[in-house]
Length: 283
Image 1: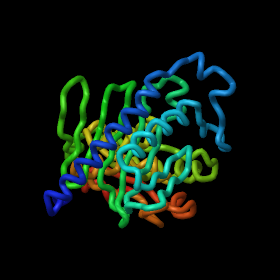
Image 2: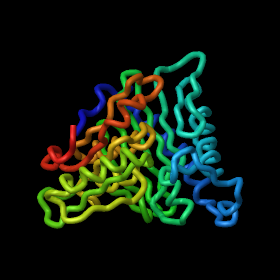
Image 3: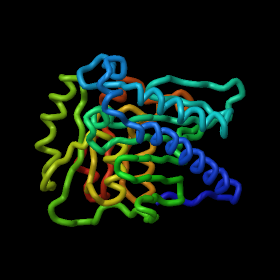
């Protein structure tokens, strides 16, 4: 578990950042909650970003806009990087940067599979993640964490502190995902047999942010995936880490501009689980 902030001022800053992250993620999730089959069926509503299965919808774009509006209103001097709209760099930067995935699990969203949500996280100038939220409207769950303050789930009117998966239980489940790139996907599939040693079953839910949160709440025993973008793991990895999980995520090549770069990203694994499972994943 990470150490608590060193001063009341630091605690106040974390509380402020987490509050903004929650408001921003809720704004994005509200857009997603308006999902409409007829709108998604329209040709103009769904586009492919270049690789088969890598979709973007009008909801992705609208949700990111909604998230950015909230952040800009509360933190106008912070930088923002997002999956759909790219980087925003203020003239008088604060040194803090937000990472947005407005709709993590777009394919699930299109097909009305409930594992999708809005992910919002913020890092400081050193690349240290300070607060993160994953708001999953179809599940009715909001996962959130701030550095040194633990990880939490709000669902059904209750608030629960997250403590990660149960150590040493039988029937362990590994969660993973596969690249849209056929060559990378073939390599990932080739590694799956080795990764499965010590696990009873595997799940592929289609949302990295939620997979990481489901490790935090103990649903999954571990998660590992190669080639994630920063916005895929930014909030979920912090939630898992603050739940007491062992977490490995790609380092940020440039904390103020986002990262990692493409070469590092394609080779790097993002992993979470109990410490006893840390050796299962490739370096």
